[in-house]
Amino acid sequence: MKSIDYHRPRSLDEAWRLADSVPGARFVAGGTDVMVGLKNKALRPGALISLRAIPGLARMENGTETRIGALATIGDIAADPVISERYPVLVQACRRLGSAQVRNVATVGGNLCNASPCADTAPPLLVLEARVRIEGPSGKREMALDEFFRAPGETRLSPGEVLTEVVLPPPAPAARGVFFKLGRVHMDLAKASVAALVEMDGKRCKRARFAAGSVAPVPLRLREVEKVVEGAVVDDKLIARAQEAAMKGVSPITDIRSTAEYRRQIVGVFVRRAIEALSKVGV
Ligand SMILES: Cc1cc2nc3c(=O)[nH]c(=O)nc-3n(C[C@H](O)[C@H](O)[C@H](O)COP(=O)(O)OP(=O)(O)OC[C@H]3O[C@@H](n4cnc5c(N)ncnc54)[C@H](O)[C@@H]3O)c2cc1C
Image (cartoon, rainbow, N blue to C red; front, side, top):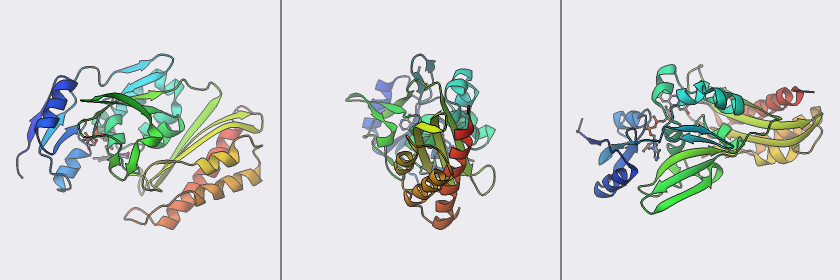
């Protein structure tokens, strides 16, 4: 194996200088995707620039909003009592990501920047309407996570830019969430996943957010399902319409994990189960 220079900058400025000076340099956080890419030769970076020694990037802050540093590990997030209380749907998804060993090093920023359609943190963060904070040599910006993914493996990050934080709006006290994932075995990338966040007022759904993974080129909000459910009285007919909208709203592929048709079915079933479960809470 050809050797690769490994840098461990202590500041973002230093990381940007390195990224600018080495053609094909790649940032690395936990390395759980990067190392697989190196091993199977899908990645041939000019150098690796670790983000792990940059102070503050793993910080988690719970104020009015919650700010999760991009270098926070999936394990850190799953173990945080405030995040567990405020955003249980995110914690459910974190607990389904990989093994304990993977969760101890894999970061939320890496999961999003890797831009896999099956990234487990993406559907819950989409229903929570998370924003991402991006910092680069030419400045800082924030965007809705919904706009961040471009295509499999591609994001809106420009060369040299670092995802520094995931920002979660304050939780709606009455909102209840759920995350469903199906893999070939328990520890596997998703054949399909669905996250839902629903606020009920008796039998009427006041607010609904749905998102899915592994059923389109990017993790996506199921807006047609939201249109069916939001403002409506939840009954069997509505659930059937929502299930149909979910199946119509996705564009899965067939690959080694599943067929397109099965993925479409699963998304419909997960949406149905989510509405059935969440519409009962508190009634
Ligand atoms: C055995 C195993 C099981 C797995 N199971 C799952 C699973 O069940 N669900 C799932 O979703 N994933 C799974 N993964 C994939 C992986 O663990 C996750 O995607 C993880 O969150 C990636 O984070 P990382 O910090 O390791 O990223 P890295 O490998 O360090 O980086 C991934 C990509 O993001 C870029 N990057 C990382 N951080 C930043 C940043 N802050 N700013 C800009 N670019 C950045 C890197 O340049 C690279 O392109 C698994 C991986 C393995 C090896």
